[in-house]
Length: 77
Image (cartoon, rainbow, N blue to C red; front, top):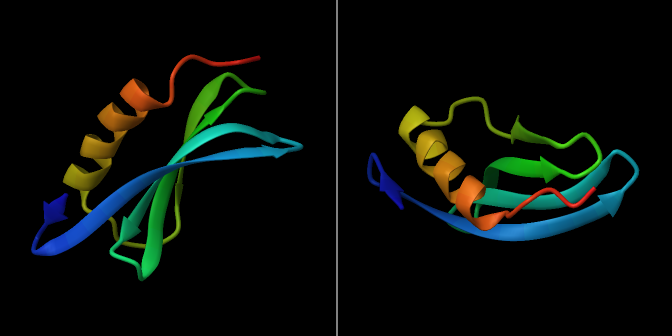
C-alpha cells in the first residue's frame, strides 16, 4: 500500500511467549522500519495495536485493521 508517496508492506507473524500468544499483522515501511503491529492475543481474546513509530498515517491503520480482522482468523484460546 502507498500512502503519501511511501510504500508500506504487511506480513503475518506468530508469537508464543507468556502474555503474547497469538498472531500478528506487522506493517513495515519498505524494509526499513516496523511501523506497528495488530496482534490477535489468544490469551486475552483481544486485538491489540502496538505502534513502533510516533507518527503513523490514520488511513494506513484503518486499512490494516480490516486486513487484520480478515486474515488473522478466530481466537484460539
